[in-house]
Amino acid sequence: MTLRHFLRDDDLTPAEQREVLGLAMAFREDRHLRQPLSGPRAAAFITDKPTLRTQVSFATGIAELGGFPMIVDGNLAQIGKRESIADTTRVLTSMVSAIIWRTFGDDRIEEMARVSTVPVVNALTDGFHPCQILADLLTIAQHRGGVNALPGQVLTYVGDGANNMAASYLLGGATAGLHVRIAAPSTYQPDLVIVEKAAAIAATTGGSVLVSDNPAVAVAGADVVATDTWVSMGDEAQAAEREKPFIPFRLDADLLAHAKPDAIVLHCLPAYRGKEITADVIDGPQSVVFDEAENRLHAQKALLTWVLEQR
Ligand code: CP
Image (cartoon, rainbow, N blue to C red; front, side, top):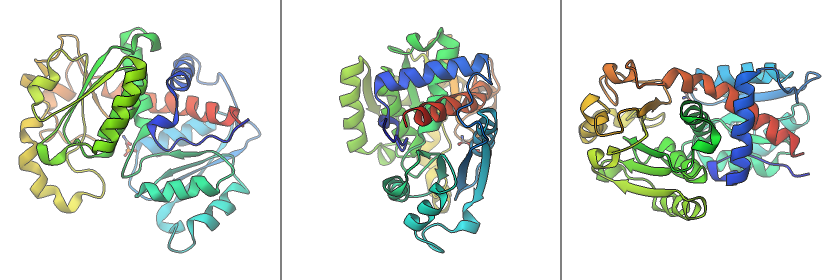
């Protein structure tokens, strides 16, 4: 048995990701299918940043898995300031069966994982949002005939190519065998190291990776079109300077028309209508964003069940 953490999308192999997504599909059908936290055993959800979906879906999910969701306000805990990450982790692991952390630098959650004796799950860092991508893959599977239908789907993400969602689409999408296309302004392109890692994974799964600064070309023929805020948490001071370069990457009806007629639209939420996505698109018939939000619950329950059962 092995202690498994989920800090970034490529912490799951393609086979492991398929297993988790298959279990997530089963949790969609039966919310009380498995209870790996029965007792109840506690799982800690810590957040250093704002959240709605992530906190609610983890808290609900932990309860539905038979456990107790221990919500820790990062502003009170002040991890790394009031107490070291290592000492905090040692205290938590004496009491909880898993730690789920939304924080800033990836170095923080990596340090926690090095010390932890229980699974550590990334609930969003500056670098990655892997639980969101599991939910997005589940949403594509839900609308495309199941997990086996994922390989070969063309997913285009338009917007900030340098943010955590783009990095996670690259790694998680490539792991699922998707053709991942990122369309971003030339000054907001993904980290080359992540692009190369995603391309290496795609070479083993039949997927592919494309990075472009032309949104219409990238969206052409896509099965799935995704976007995200132009101003991620931590980038607020750059909000004004970020607006202009992103305007051509706004997901509106004209841009969506380049995709397949039955393409679905994803947005991890919260959305800023009139900025990265227009109201007619996010509220239109191709949008599945509220299925996507609900799928956070099912995907994370499957992930928690899977990591807990590896021990
Ligand atoms: N998509 C997402 O992570 O939502 P929250 O920031 O509300 O948790």
